[in-house]
Length: 290
Image (cartoon, rainbow, N blue to C red; front, side):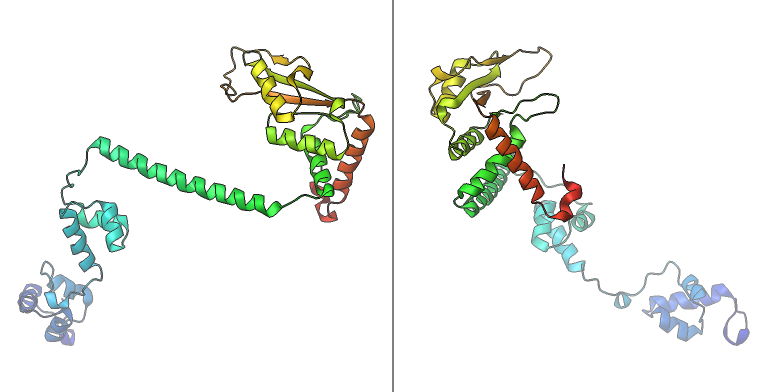
């Protein structure tokens, strides 16, 4: 073993000195200076197995947190409670207290489920409140519609949901079907703007054959203000036994079809207005048009 002045000394004798100095409380640097051993690897081997004195240990910032976490765990606190109390990560809490026994549960499984369900109910209520607030704000931002705005809205609505003329099937007539009563009411208000009298309308309920047809007709009669006796015979959808239907129950009212008689000229106006809306889109959006 190379030592001071290029000489070699007995390693075991040097180790005995190093261990004695270590046990006397000297640091590695002090032992290095005392024995003149400047090779770090050799110095580590000389004191191998001997713990450093307490005064040389650098205090860690989380030591206090660790002790507090262990104290709280022994009091029966959960990981999440300790995390919230100390402001540290759950993984750190787990590392610090994993050797401690699990605290005894303070409530029965039924009570835990009840608390969980109550928490979920509060969460759902809060989310629902936020959703409704967003909707109310958006609705208030619309305000009153001018006749022009209503006309454009109705044209877009019809082109999305109404029957359209095809090159292979000439049907220049207004025919609209939907299951949403708000959409139906808006469509009727749009027809009023276009001065279409109610006498020109043919109404028909389209509904599944197993549903309450008469009840659905009364429902749509109340929505439209048109007597159910004026409705055409309902169109019944046949039941497919392999299909699992979800549109069942008391709230299922089918769809209402509204046919406007003698409406070829009006249909052409609507189609022209729609393409006028399309043509008004800024040129930069032309690739996105359909």
